[in-house]
Amino acid sequence: MDPVIIVGAGPVGLALSLALAAQGVPSVVLDETSGKEEPRPARTVVLRADMAALVERLGCATVRDEGLRWVGWRGMRRRQQPREVAFDLGLGGTEEWSEDPDSPAAPAAPLHIPQHALARGLRDAIAREPLVRLVTDARLDTVEQDRTGVTAHTRGPDGTWWRGSHLVGCDGARSTVRKLLGVRFPGRTAVERHAVAALRTELPWPGESLLHRQPPWRGVGEEITARPLPDGVWRIDWLLPPRGELVTPDALVTRIRETLAGWCEGTTPPYELLDTGVHTLHHRLARRWRVDRVLLAGDAAHLLGAVGTQGLDEGLRDVDNLAWKLALTWHRSAPDALLDSYQSERRTAIAARLRAADQALPALRGGGGLRTYLPGVMRGHDALLTDGHLGRGPLGASPAYPHSPLAAPFSEGMVPVGTPLGAPVEDVRVTAPDDTTVRLRDRLGQARFLVLLVAPGSGVWERRHWRTAGLMPRLEEAAEALPVASEVLVTDAYPGAPAHAVLLVRPDGHLVAAFAGVRPEELHAAAEAARGSVPEEALEEGPEGRQEKVGRSGASSPEPVVPVEVPAPAEASLGHDRTVDVH
Image (cartoon, rainbow, N blue to C red; front, side, top):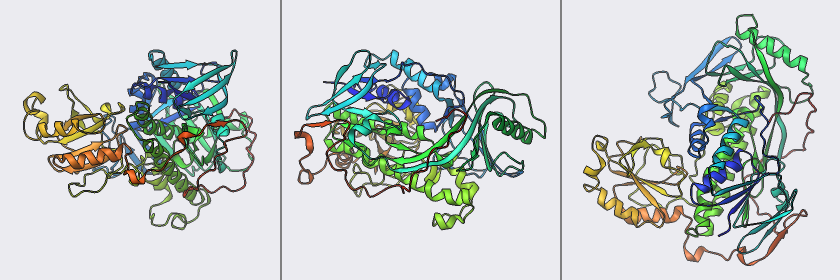
């Protein structure tokens, strides 16, 4: 069968190729560049713990070698420090955590890494992967679709036609794939601008990230963020006014010196300036993420990043959501509705995050009352920004898909657990079929569903002693009869789950259903729903039978009405800063 064509060799496209390879799907990655990543210390990414684990599973060694997990986070306002959070460096952190220092639950530590180091690690992993072919100097200019696949043409030293089963556009904000499809990309331009500097120095909070609002020093701006990197390097961002103010090198150096002096008791410590830039944030959302066999992911599908949200982290969540669905479709073991659910789930999640950020911005940047913009939210501005930076609430929490078309049908055997249906499961320790004890996250991403039995006390016995006792024989028989590949795991305990509960988990780590004991028929029905099966009477004839050619004039098919949209006022022109733009 033809490989999947991936257009774009940024971190999202590279990660997608590796995620597909892990599930037995070959791919061709078309890179319009020469393949050499320019080191830019001021261009960095923050990955939540689950996405850092995804990248590490894909073989990216630079996550460990060149990234830094923060030991804590602190929020300051003027000269006061109202918030401080310690992170769980054991990576056993939870989505449900409290800022109460006496709380036993702590958030898992985020990972901060230069983007060029992340991309280099992914390229190194691809060099060891026989199922991925990376082609440089290949610029896409044509896409054609038919009922059996996609044909793409690239310009370059030798113009080439490529044939694939599907094509995924991971080619960034100015996506050629999106333009060839004629898909609109409405939204807001320059919602935030930041001056950025990467420098090596010593600050009073080694290993901790800092958000300082309304610092008491003149001329440095209303908000400063400092994020540590390995080897004593820090990335510092200064929020800029939305209009005007060119950022000259002299002005940036002044900001650096005044900021460092303010944090270090009035004396500017020695520092080495490594890189500077201006980071301009846009909020945009593509109207469609799938047109038959062509899909969009990452910045080609969405742009976000204001008030602490992380754009690349969301792009990797696109990969995590899409890879297993595309793999099952490629292996011809899933209906077409499974691939449709990629847009339904991910676009809805991104739209909700964009809406929350757009609603919060007037309050956070204009000083208005928060309740005016976010009804029901009683917390202050500082707490809202904490959510965005630390992965909580509407601005930052990992997405859940409670209303997914893949949701399991309700049954009386279902039981509530600490994880809501459709949300990411907790990273508990589990016993695998080979008798090893691993984290649940280590078993994800293999195009197989996980069947997790909660069996208190099982951790003190070897698996060979209890796999033929109690519920295990019946559970393994039920798992073997599922319509999808699956693996049975056992854990001593799961938050909020009663003894002998059985959890069905998708390949991307989202909870499908939890049952009281082994219920083969209900487990089977939940798995059927999660692979996109629908009753025959609900099926409609799709567009598979028509030949479609998409050129620069765009696709002829009409765009559907989408219920969620980002406000799109008249676009403002981008500022012409004298420093280099950092994305």
